[in-house]
Length: 269
Image (cartoon, rainbow, N blue to C red; front, top):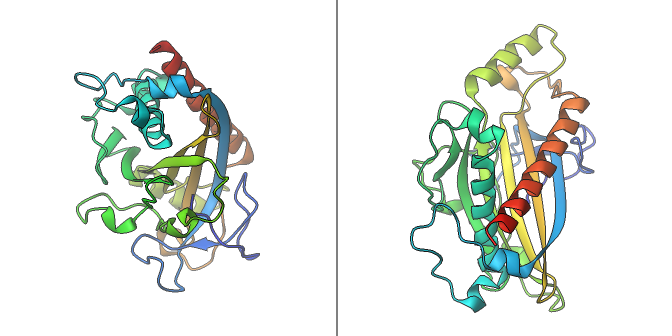
């Protein structure tokens, strides 16, 4: 997952060890202008039997999986099944009930709406990557008509270049989400009058599968939350963010999402 470069003038994110500014989506990766920052970072991991991931068929699928056994047991196939299981699991949880009035049709094209309300907290497909096929994240795949992510997300092409053949086969899926603008502006106005906290503008989630053996896959779920360095156009950078206890709640939520996803995999077998 993309992360900020070290900069001592910017606080370290909750849960992270590097601090620094990030470019917005429109600023891209070509210049020095960076108007966002990484306010929190979560990474949770679990080992899952390859058989569970390889055999999963999404509740949203019509007519079952079209992958053969070799494809389904590859990191690519397991990564596709993992994101299916994640979306199925969260749709049955309290977050699905609170956030989703109606689940959109399942579509993994870049920019596709995955869950949430278009006027509230919403998540969208960004791109996927694979070490086997050397297919990297490409920011250019996002259509101009798609909702704009909070920050720029660079390609991971350099990381997929063949360096160490002993590294496990791996693949991943990246989605982005945006918080409701009205809520963000409400907290920003309160913060400008002395309220000590702000909410994040949006962020990224990445689901990574590493095939560490023929029997075991390592699943990593990463979440990155980002904020504006100059909310509401203000010049001073106050770096206000959610309190530490709220971050701890986010960590617990990330752990519960991964646990529910694994339970969804087991329930389907």
